[in-house]
Length: 266
Image 1 (cartoon, rainbow, N blue to C red):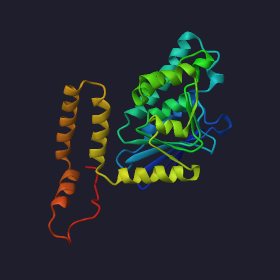
Image 2 (image 1 turned 30 degrees about the vertical axis):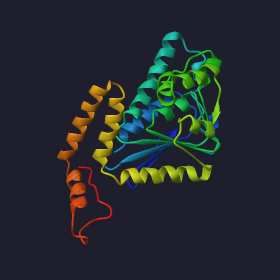
Image 3 (image 1 turned 90 degrees about the vertical axis):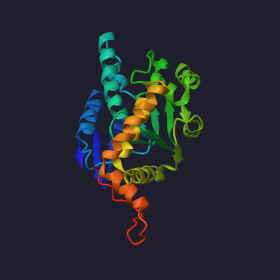
């Protein structure tokens, strides 16, 4: 287990659980938390960790947003720098080699919604609330909200949510495709860990290549996107996991055939 002042990282059975913990501030993001997130993700051992779950401490809030107290006195240049700091960290999460699941346990407002959208998969508790309330504070979303929300739920819905600064509850977030599933609060983290375990049981290099293929392919036209996939598909045939997985599938001897292939990440 690794700890910073505002984060807790626990790793067990190839699954990492990273908890943002500023309960007095509803887990709001400030410069220190962003720096700790950057350092923590960079410290994850990708040889032994196959999936990461990101959540917030307590039962009220995932991440309530960026720290308004810190932002309130920023100059134009300082505002841009703060936005870049957040965007750099969130982009690192988005492009992190292994899958990242956001287990949204309450408020996910502003920067909280934005960090969840940087994750590969979002699931939430029944008490979750999502929103980009920035225009009500005289600013725009600054950590990728104008870009990722439109890509996830469509430009029209994203513009409606951002322009109105309206918060939405878990059922509406599910309806518009912002989250994949909604759970009672007490079932959320176990559900996230179960999903992570299912992912971790598959060939890890193949899973990583799938993430890269999807992420990179979405940035280019279809003709270039399928070339991205072809190269990553081909790369898999240099791995021992491919040989083990296909070899087991083709095994005729029922005594030798495995129900679960012990993929080695190589």
